[in-house]
Amino acid sequence: MTPTLEAYLAKADSLAKLEPKHMPKDILREFTKLDAPALYKTCTQFAILRHNIPQKDAVLTLEEEEIASLAQRYATEVLDALKALVR
Image (cartoon, rainbow, N blue to C red; front, side, top):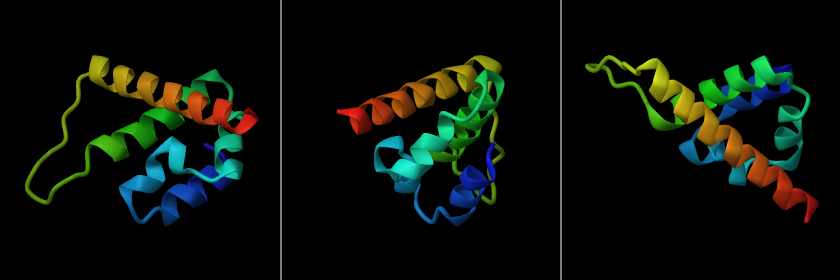
């Protein structure tokens, strides 16, 4: 993850800010700087945070397949948001 993405994630104060369609252009462009493994890891982190907010009394458990699916969907959303920038 780039320092810019880390800073954005640290300052995110609502789930809406984790939605690719709501991200600023400069943040979306940061995703293009990542190689494939880093992109997968970053999409995984953003997707898990967006979909699984931890509770005080509940433990988060996701199967590997669920994590991969969340990351893939998130990456697709990032690509769609990037495509919208070009139009």
